[in-house]
Structure formats: structure tokens, C-alpha cells
Image (cartoon, rainbow, N blue to C red; front, side):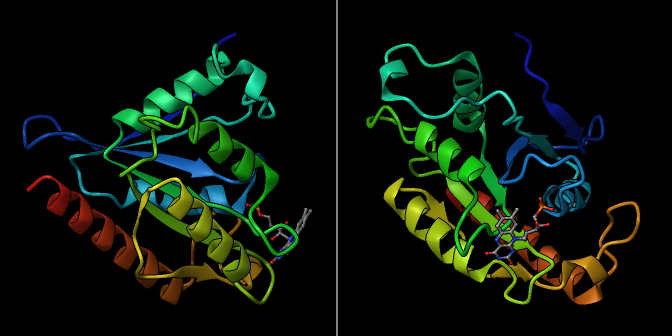
Length: 200
Ligand SMILES: Cc1cc2nc3c(=O)[nH]c(=O)nc-3n(C[C@H](O)[C@H](O)[C@H](O)COP(=O)(O)O)c2cc1C
């Protein structure tokens, strides 16, 4: 079974220091997901020496501890991607006041085996968009707790909560809301700063 991975490179030959790798995880499998569009916005605006890979969660099975000894191929692939990434960026819708099942299932896989889990000490930034009024705040509070349990290094500020999303993207899925663009820029700055700090 082949895994499809959406690859976006923001590199320019010849400039730079080491290539920095970011893995994007979207809590929605929807083709036109607004949360995927948030990740794509970030990928287009990262510094040039950054590479962004959007993880493909479509083949990740439901978690089953019977498979822990021999992890499913899609899970192994994702775990490797995350292990080798300098940081992970999660964008998720809120479902019934929490994270989506897709995201929780993925994080459960990434939390095993208990020793040397891919997200342990990993820099993780989170964000979310919804057509609703609360901007995914309830999901993000739960997500922070889950990431805390996984010993991830969560970026605390800015909190990227995008409510009323139906008015903030154009027909091509690009963000047209100035305040959202500003906060996403602040998130990139915080991420870059944290990665720099981790390499000192
Ligand atoms: C099962 C389900 C539960 C939902 N629960 C919430 C919710 O609690 N809060 C909210 O703001 N939106 C909720 N929504 C609406 C989603 O925010 C909306 O479908 C959003 O577009 C999904 O994000 P996506 O475009 O990235 O797939 C729910 C949608 C579904 C399908």
C-alpha cells in the first residue's frame, strides 16, 4: 500500500543553514478542510530553509494495542516523519467540544510504545478554525492536556483560534482575514524562535 504524502518545499538552493523540517497534522480528513487550509497557509509563509510536509492520516487505522509489537505501515511512516521533524504543527476542528476522533486516534498511536515516543520533547504548535463562534477553544484546551501527557513541548502563545471561519477564507481556501493572518505570522515567529532555542 503506498502512502500519499503532500510535500511542500520552501527551500532555495544555495543559501542556507540546515534544513528545518515541520510536519503538519490535520485533525480533519476532509478534502476542503479549513484546518488543512490553515496548515497550507503556514507552509507558504515559513522561512526558506524550512520544509513542510503534511502528514497523510487517511490510512491510519483505529488504534489497537494488539498491533503494538508490529505497528501498521502507515503508523510507522508517520512516527518516523514525526521523529525526524524539528517541530509538529497541529490544526484541528473541534468536534462536540473536543478534538476530533481522527486526531485523538493519531495521537494515541504516536504515544506508543511508552519509551522514546515520537512526540516526547517535540516542539508542537497548535491552531484551529471553525465556522462556529468559539474558535475551537474547547478542543484546544483538551489538545493541550493530551500533548502534556505525551511530554510534548507545546508552544503556549499565541493562541490561534479562528472563529466564523466561513467569512475568513476565499473560494480558493486562502485566508483573507487580516487579524487571522497576523496571528498566524506570530505563530510562525514563535515556532521559529522555539526551534532556534532548541538548537543552541
Ligand atoms: C461531528 C461534528 C461535531 C462538531 N462539533 C463542533 C463543535 O463542537 N464546535 C465547533 O465549533 N464546530 C463543530 N463542528 C463543526 C466543524 O467545526 C466544521 O464542520 C468544520 O468545518 C470542520 O473543520 P474542517 O473544515 O477542517 O473539516 C462539528 C462538526 C461535526 C461534523
